[in-house]
Image (cartoon, rainbow, N blue to C red; front, side):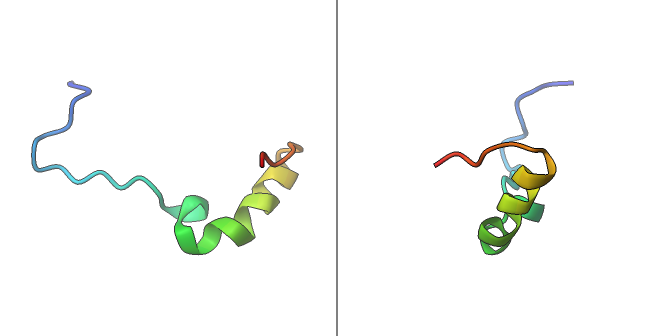
Length: 40
């Protein structure tokens, strides 16, 4: 298995709680659930 994707492979980087639409509302909840401080 190669760690280099195929030439025509499109990598999806942000989905779920890291998507642009959800990040500002869900990321603080993720930090709270993990008992972490949010980075500025």
